[in-house]
Image 1 (cartoon, rainbow, N blue to C red):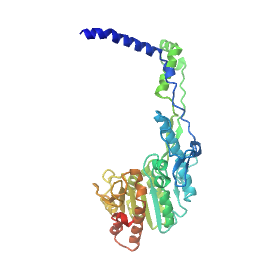
Image 2: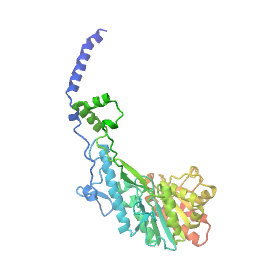
Image 3: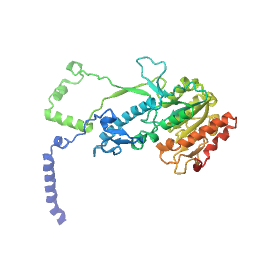
Image 4: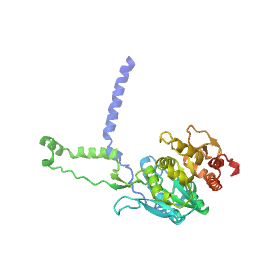
Length: 400
């Protein structure tokens, strides 16, 4: 008890000293280290980055890979910087599709008016006229756009693993026409119009006394209130609204639209799909809506770590049976490439992509997918049973 009484004055003294210290701190001065402006370059050169001869993104002065934590303790700013670079990467890949792969950029909807929101896809010159083979590429969900598998891979690994370009070039070398879908380009963003609210006394329902008290708020109090508002939201970003693209407002809608207006109109006897992640779900939805047409035109489908679910999507028995015979899903697994992987769902066979990284499954299964398509095409040509086309599901890694 005596110890408690003895400690009392000490605690009181510490509390007084702490209050005195806090009273001396100027919060405005303390928070002067504000977040830098969210104003980033709009070119790779501006970021001082470039792709080298191996397709790797490197700093033009240091030769180092991309650094996410450019500024310590400013995660939000670093994330915004990364996103700004990502937008540049998207445009860069679009340029590669046109210049390196010689694809054409096709605006959709095909009958769009001058003023309505539009998207686009990419096609080879012979996509609709090639009588033999057509390859259709569908990426997954998120920030990726036409020609990409994973932005993270493009920035941190290389263009080969992160883009669809190796698939496109090899497909064209082997005589395929090519169509590259753009399922995440579902809307355009426009700035919300500013609504000006009248503050005159005539238009206010507030009592006169209350308005008078608000008008008399001391300047120091207002300054402090503004500071706290700035602290909560250091840089107020522009408010935007989304204007959806007609008949392309979701990946599923987009897949059906491109099927109806392009793929179904193509001359190709054999159509092949490569669909990654959510792209697999979009393909299954396409089958559900256009089952007979898909069955008559599509020869084989390569899925890479697809997130489709035949139960949740309510795919019928005939669709599940067709998928078992004509599809293969290369999934993330630590097993060697093409090793059979058990599935809980009664849809298509699952084999290892030779990697346990989801975003790498398309690139790692690249050689197996082309072998799968070749065998499926040959089997169809020689009128063999569809089941025989699935030999490639069981090929051993060393056979590659």
